Length: 157
Image 1 (cartoon, rainbow, N blue to C red):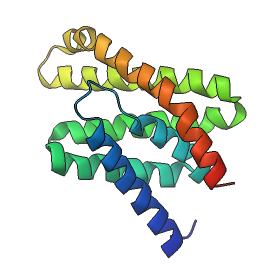
Image 2 (image 1 turned 30 degrees about the horizontal axis):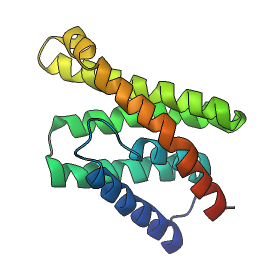
Image 3 (image 1 turned 135 degrees about the vertical axis):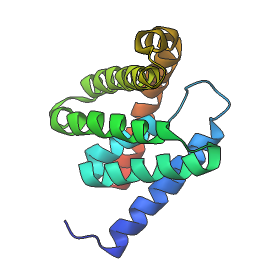
Image 4 (image 1 turned 120 degrees about the vertical axis):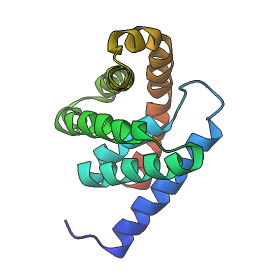
């Protein structure tokens, strides 16, 4: 797939929007519309563009909110889950997409918690202590996904 100016502009604009959304919701614990946006972008723009939007968003927000080894863990975890999403989600109805994106959002939190725990040699402790926040993240993604998906559907039809 050729990287045209239109495609680069779309990736840049959606990345900037995602950074803005992340900034707007920073005060709420793990309530982030960007997760839904990443998964929807994979569905409508493809895995490569969705991955680029996610990686740019995580990197830029890392410079704004603090950059460290967790950024690489976030990009890796999202990348793996987005690849899995790209294989399964296109064949699902909206209801099943919402169910899957909720599960993947929760799994994203568990993967991150475990990777943080590995840095401090206490993976399971981090996973257990993060379950409530991972649940917040999954529920917020469940709520944001239909809204963001309907916007993408109308704009990119």
